[in-house]
Every structure is written in C-alpha cells, then in structure tokens.
Length: 320
Image (cartoon, rainbow, N blue to C red; front, side, top):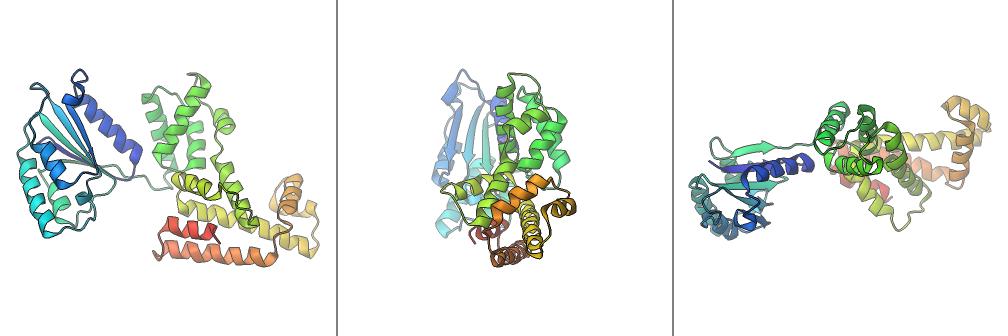
C-alpha cells in the first residue's frame, strides 16, 4: 500500500527522506500533474486529494500532507471522528500508482487515527529522531556522510568541532556545512575553516556575559532563540554553571586580596584573560552572582525533574 508516515524531530533527515521519495515517484516532466502538497490541511482536503483521480497520465503521483493535525494531539469531536473513519477507507483503497505521504514532527499513537495508520500493514512508517546530545561522535560521522552527499568534503575533526559548538540538530549543522563549502570554493573543509567562519560558541559566551552584566541588547532574545535551535538546554545549563563559577571564583579571590598572577595559576588561564574577566565583571555585585548561581541550580533542577520544559527553563533563567 503506497501510504507513508515520515515523522520525528530530526528535521533535516526527515526532509532528506521526503526528497528521496519525491525523486523516486514524481515525474519532473509532469510537474504539478503528478505532485500535490497540502500544508496543515483539514480532513476534507486530505480526503479530496486522496480520492481524486490522478492526472499523471497513468504514471505515479505523490500527495504530500504536511502537519496533519489529527496525527498529533488535536482533539477529535464526533464529526471529525466520522470523517476520519471515511479517510481510513480512502487510504486503504489508494491505487498502486498514487503515493500518499504524511509528514509531521509528532505522531501521538495514543489516539485512534494515529494508532491505526501507524499499525502493521497500513503504511510505511519511518521515525527520524534527533540523536541524544551526548552522541556527538555519531552526529559528527553523520555530518561527514551527509556533506559528501551534498558535494561538500569536510574533515572529521572539522565536523566534530562544528558539533561541539552547535549541538546535534542536523539542520543548522548542514546549513553551516553548506556555508563552509561555498567559502572554501569546493576545497575540503578543515577545522581551521570552522574556527574562522563559525562563531556559535562565541555567541553563547557573549549571551552569558550580557546576562550576567544585565546589558541585554535588543538582539538578546533573538540570539537566545538561535542558540537554543543549535544546542540542547542540558548542555547550556552545564556551560552556564561553568561560566558563572569561573566569574564567581575570580571576584571572590579578588575580595580576599589574591593577586591576578595567582588567580591565573589556580585557574590555568592566561594572566591577560584573568585581567580582562575581572575588568568585564568588576561592576557586577557579588549578591547578583550568588543569586544567579542559585537560579541556575533551581531551573536546571526544574528541567531535569520535568517541572518545566528544558527550553522554557533556560529561557526563564536568561530573563532573570
């Protein structure tokens, strides 16, 4: 049966699978006659597309259904339930030359329609799940493979550097790979290129500095959104703790009269970097640093225990 469900939060790999199926099914010479896309359709629109006669002149056709609400957690009333039953009948009688593809980030299998359509024998189901943030080696290898398919050669250490700085979401990683490919003019992308062109880790430190000093430029929350697209909040909480602890230690030692050379020795940092950090944060009251340390622990705990969604917890922390 030519019905497919592609779902999951790994947007890049999911879209690559959609492109692969589209290339296999759609005849470019026929264009819209063999390919139709529905975005956030209602049930009637889906039924019409599934039941309509194909204009592909006897060849294969593809109907792409993007973000169909009833695959997720949309409430179903009696009228919608009746329509969904009719849709089931339509989907089980799709002609062999008409391919119906549902694409969604989420499928709630607790509900009747998603449970039925993802059941055995109804559709070809593929889940594209973002890898856990700690599987950086696996993501790095995947970046190298996908880059090669897109005509960009990237060194393994360069891919690893990108993943360390940006997180494990493939879409922003591949956007950066394409940018690097253009920059190198078709030459292999090296770690040196990544350090020269990619600045996401620097953006994180700049964001944290603005948060601690309460500067918050107009672009602060835009930068925060951009960072949260690329890095898991769990990683960001850990980075924030380290960043804040380093500042707290320097300021505390400064109050005790420890000289900068000794601070550099204790922290294994360049003395000049210690000097710059002390100058940057000398106006931040120790009370604020103490409160921020407590808030980091508070919101990280809320994220880990499920009291707050992890992204919301980090956003709330950055607003404090």
